[in-house]
Length: 375
Image 1 (cartoon, rainbow, N blue to C red):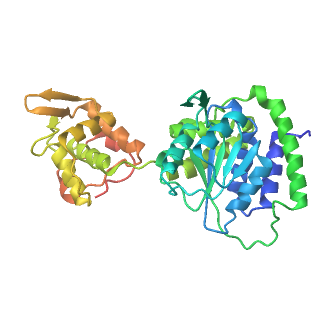
Image 2 (image 1 turned 30 degrees about the vertical axis):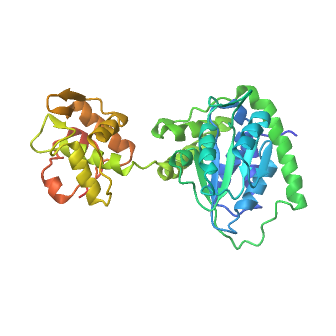
Image 3 (image 1 turned 90 degrees about the horizontal axis):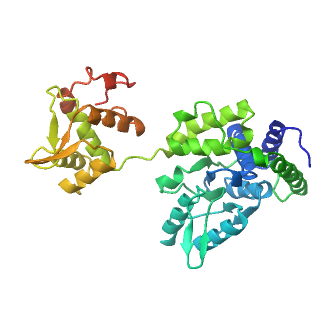
């Protein structure tokens, strides 16, 4: 069936959604953009996931049933094995909708989470005897709470549902809803035919402000809306204010403690040129003191500190007669400030006694950061 414009198609989807589920306008717009995206998802390099969470009777299953009526090649399941997911995604490229998923149900769920992480990109494939499968494609997960897997959460746009007392909502199985959904699918199919060859990842203004995964999700989700500045801007603002902060992966306590020690060392009032990794008052000992004060009882060895330094991108280490040391030069300072900014911790918390030994006012990199020093 023909449609007048992409803008009108989005508005029809938004209105249709509000007849079935009681969600805020921003969620209705996001869901409309996701439905439109599923019809061209196979043309884009990054798959968009939705994570619908909420208490029982909050409308999660109803929303999933509604999406099954509108998304391209939707497959609604209450349970699916990793092998079945691989085969289904490889053969049919569906929009996979999983209801009541329990992220902590069994040991196999860990493998399934890894499969879902890999399925957000085209390039990752699973090799089995005589076959090669992929789990790439748009997906929607419905659960009581978000997964504890931070890497998977960063690939999911989260929608929080709440129970409503709106008695005017219609069931997805209502004849007029079924008929309206059928008409919308015909228009969405025409949209796919019209725009399939021209679909490319969207170039959204200011997208560089987002973290890489958020930016990739935005570029895919906004691809069908690239000519509509209002909706593209809405998606950017939603990713910036809602998705990025919620899915920001926290640092491991060991990494955070070590980063705080380095932060303190590069801001000492009496500057030092380097610090030993091991030995008395070395990085390992000082880091363990921070861990102990925060309740962590497992100490770090010198070798473990060396490995963490390498994983965090500190390259200015070298071996001396006294053992391995970290140079506290401009490269280390720049890396420390960059790490703090990346993990939204521009000024690590240090005790008052430690702060008195440091001088943050003379650091040009600190002056460029916003906010007062926390103690």
